[in-house]
Length: 399
Image 1 (cartoon, rainbow, N blue to C red):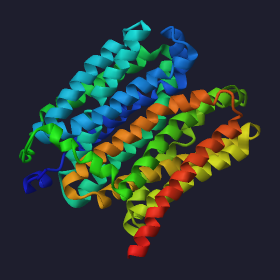
Image 2 (cartoon, helix red, strand yellow):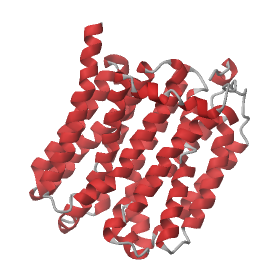
Image 3 (tube, rainbow, N blue to C red):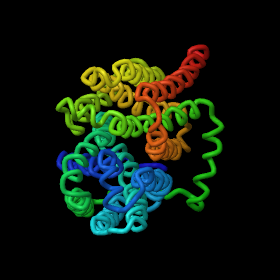
């Protein structure tokens, strides 16, 4: 896709940027709101406890698939058109989901909600990355990435605080308002100069996926991405499952247990500077290593030292938050310009497939000791860090 110089100078106003970041937080939070209330959802929708994770899995797989659809679609129809249409559809589905009562309708509604939600994050990133000065584009994308990542904890806190107290329907309705207001705001913004429409059918744009998977440098991004959010979702589900009662017995609510790690999600703003100094490879590998080390510290603290475990979770979350922008920058450096957009879209697809597998991983750990569970997660991210580091070594030899 080729974007005109005029598009590059059309920086969204500060108010629009804030509204888009806030909307991004509300959209991505949809994945995480059910995490702290899975037992309540199982009871409300007559689901067996082991199937409550379908509320996450159905959303996550549809959300991941949607990334592969809406990114290329926005190349053809325009960024604003796709964002406005997607947010209107998301508002309608989310409002309807607040009133369903049967398990089949609930799970189906979550899948539709996930697919519609995928229309905003990748397109909003592309929209902001194409407008303004280079510095404005970098910071616009950095704030948007921070919103995407912090939704992992803020969504859980919101779910625990609002949905846990009044029910999922009450938690969803304020989000409907955010989607509708943002769609209305974007609809009033000029589309700007249209990008050159890609030639051929949209399906031809997916052929390079096999080339991407054949690239060793990109494989060393996609595998860690799969494990990253899988471990993140599994960590907090496992924390509730194994230690929820122990944590609450010490006067710490589940919301507070999550909130302690919230400052770590400002790490992407630090990662932007580190990437310029160290390079994307080292930042991504370091982030994965820090995340694995944080999980080892959590396992060492165990259920006997809950405050230390929660403090160690800050290290783990910081590692996750550093890894994500590092992996994105690594794709930008490794993929050729003609397939870079698809490479990033496929990265987000893999990332949220991992998030969808998190409930399954957390569920199979029911019979494990919590320390064993945390060490398994640490081993996965440690292996991912080593796999990522191989490419760094290869690059060093090449230089």
